[in-house]
Image (cartoon, rainbow, N blue to C red):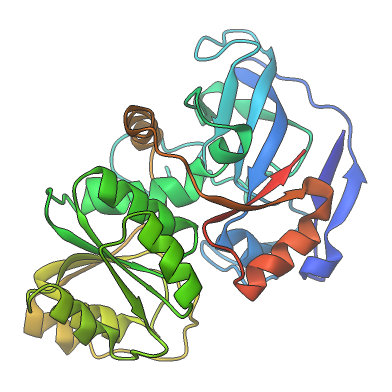
Length: 338
């Protein structure tokens, strides 16, 4: 089989297509022939050598955490899935249920566990789940990280109610899923972007208010105005320290800010006393459990939510796909097809 691999020196340009022996599933394991994979910002950081969560990445890695494929063989004792089932990989192979713990968060695909950028992959039967039949392979590949992150922020940690307001930063995968989930659940959605064209596309998905943060740099104040001075119940914070001060201005008194990423960099700090002034809750989160994933898939099927796949590349063109992500050209998700 063929696989994408990378080791030091890191860099998108150093991704290599290699030949490896076909894997064989052992007891409790399944062999999946991959059909599609999707890119996350974490993947770009990892192949660039900039990912340090849990310690620096070392050795040779097979990148990418999110994919969809078909079970081709099963090992002894497998009962969760059968040959011919279409399944998605799970971001955390060892977080099945319950709250996050250090032990449950050790088993992430891409690193330390080899990721989905390979034609054939062996997983524990516990580390895959069936996906909604109505979704294409490209759409199904987008669910494990971006969709589940938005799901957990809104429904697991945020505990929002119909009529509440959520702010989505930018138009990447997590934010667009957040917009779709919010509207399907009867929430008010406000989205930010530097592109009026992308904001127009967000309006087509139901965004109630759109704010261009380049022409309106004090977008936190604009969120307050759009909510009659109350502020947002939840902000999905993806920018990092550079956008956090605005999130603190946008959130309501005793509101919730979900820290998801830092695509805006880490150079600028913030004043923590602002949290005291408005009693806001600042919470980091990293994807979710298998139980959360399967609950999300039931919701997606019930509401017939179609993930937004903006660009599709052949998986052997992963370098181009990563450069597209680095440029920030996408609206929603970038997918690789095997």
